[in-house]
Image (cartoon, rainbow, N blue to C red; front, side):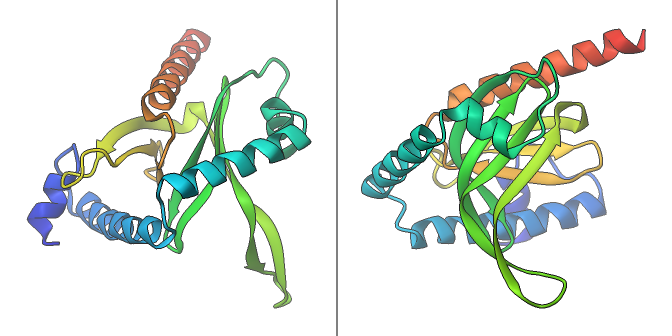
Length: 195
């Protein structure tokens, strides 16, 4: 993929050399994610099996709200808005899990444990978790693969210019709408608190 096609792939044009480099790396990660999803056998039967397996796990743990509260620090008055099954794109490949959208933050929890190397060199297994406070989100960008428009993803950019890519949603439109609403409400309440 040449630089021109990378620039066309993204909704916003590249404006600085630093962003250009960042976007180039992200385009490589996106390509890796595409290969990773195909390598995982991402098809209807796999999606159905994942959905059933996750549903059983959620029932065993007492529902989505309890899974959210058990795995993430929840503030008084914080409400879970929605949870969506998706993939988080990483440099090591896509990680399947749940994206939680609450009134205070978005949080990702992997479905399975991953192997991590501890400080003493031993391998431990732990769930992959990402938490981003809504106040730290600069924007949520709706993107799609130009060559395959059905492949949509959400790019979340933080105020300190970190990118998080979520893809493979079962209901992309609903997730994006809820995310945009919560980010907007967070910014409105933040502005009210400043005044």
